[in-house]
Amino acid sequence: MFYQFYEMGHAAVAPWRAAADAMKLAYQNPLNPLSHTAFGRAVAGGMEVFERTTRRYGKPTFGFETTRLNSGPVSVHEKTVWSRPFCNLIHFERALPANHRAEPKILIVAPMSGHYATLLRGTVEALLPKAEVYITDWIDARMVPVTEGHFDLDDYIDYVISMLHALGPDTHVMAVCQPSVPVLAAVALMEARGDAMAPSSMTLMGGPIDTRRNPTAVNQLAQDKPLSWFADNVVMQVPWPHPGFGRDVYPGFLQLSGFMSMNLDKHMDAQKDFFWHMVQNDGDSAEKHREFYDEYLAVMDLTAEFYLQTVDAVFIKHALPKGEMMHRAERVDCSEIRNVALLTIEGENDDISGIGQTEAAQTLCSNIPDTMRHHYMQPKVGHYGVFNGSRYRAEIAPRILDFMRTHSAANRKAAAAKAKSPVRKVIQGGKGN
Image 1 (cartoon, one colour):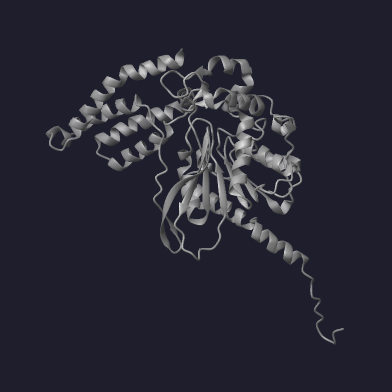
Image 2 (cartoon, rainbow, N blue to C red):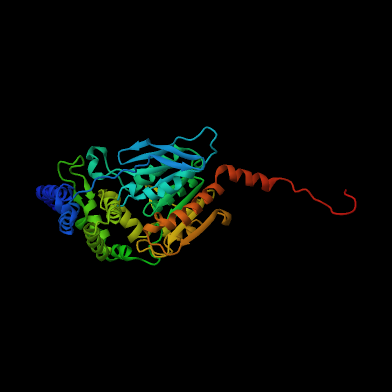
């Protein structure tokens, strides 16, 4: 009943939220003399803090209209190129000139861990000028009717394989955080099957490949509690009138509570600073706060079966690094990967996926040649900084693009041809034979 009480609480506070919003607008109206005083700005600021604290944040948009190539700006259009009940695949289609050279085709697998794919807006924005970018747009489980069936970790892996088939050969897959495990499993299965659509490279960023290494608070919780505890305490049914009414889910608002409790003091300070920015008429700082929290506070429900299977396989049993992970009736063997280049990336101060957890993939993929693998640890960034922010744009994204270009099908073919070409022996001085 907790989910129902949460919905009732939102409904009960709705009139107060509307009144607060109206009062904020009244005290921000330039025709109101008080709007030009510290008192008026304090009232408006307090009303906005209340309204934003009690608001339900909807799914944000990517909002890309243009990107800049070397030749200048071009328009960008979002197009859904693949669709299933729990996910859409979005292509950021650029209006490229006819003679534009081929660039890496990247499948970004966004986390299905509470936030929407738009959390990776900065990730996409940095890659878009230099690549054809596709991203998984996972659908809020409370919006999927129970008649569409269930969705678990096995289905997630099947989705990844199906998307790689849809995109065709010479695709580069990039997993951010949580999907590192299912993406690695999907690639291992494709290689074991001799699948011609296996990607040219995979990039794993801040992912929980082996959470036994430098366990964080998130990892420790899963170790301290049995799976039954998670099933009893965080799994709830979607209430009416949502389309997914009756579906068992791990609600987004519970996930958000967990996220925020890890750094609650910082979030409290951010709210206080936001209020004082408005009192001091610092519009730029206040707007940056709004942009960040509009994204951060927008959360989605996960299906219970996906959440519980992930907790069990990844965080409790450590099935993948132990070589015990099963995809339906097929064992996932990372040593089968031989032809897919591997790039792993970690952040020095990551408090979600500890140092070494993602790098563990390098050990598991023992048959990838040394020339096709690389590990990079970015100094002075936390979990979020691995895929967003100034250091990501300046230092991480260029490395990713360079790795993908190096291991594209065309460059591999050229390198192989060069290696097989006969070496001409040159004799200096005297007569040749």
